Length: 197
Image 1 (tube, rainbow, N blue to C red):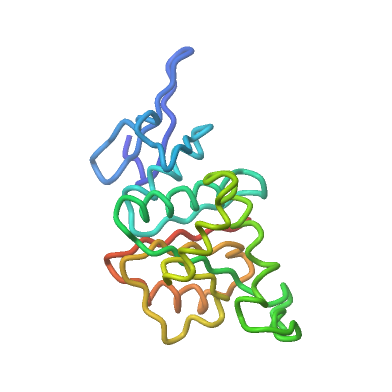
Image 2 (image 1 turned 120 degrees about the vertical axis):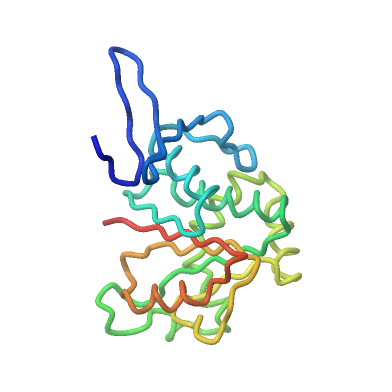
């Protein structure tokens, strides 16, 4: 059979194997080697996401809340930071789901203070990965400009080099907003787009 590029589960009796198909090439995926900052995949879908992050410049992960997307993406970003000194850029749309107005505009403070409510999911994931001293370490990364929280709507004019860029809640963006971000990502970077269909 001709297979489209993607991931497949092969089953024979009570045995199964996860493969990645790229053109005429089939590759067996070993979940044992997929560990990012002590985080391992829990099922075949997480294995596919982790394989994609490790091997492709763009990963799109769609799934319901609680499926581990943010934790896996943050684990990969931290892994890339510690192994390659890559920056971590955490983006989230801040417009209301109706797209009629910007949700952070009425909140007082600079954009970092306005982002506080939006970055909780990232902070929760980082806490699970780094442990109890995570806040001190993240503050240090922020001070060194190695960690950036940014509203997705404010990325115009920015370029992302040697970075892992994570976009969460992608279902609340427009195609134009996503393309604006993707077009600013250098070849030295990876981008992870997450959302719920």
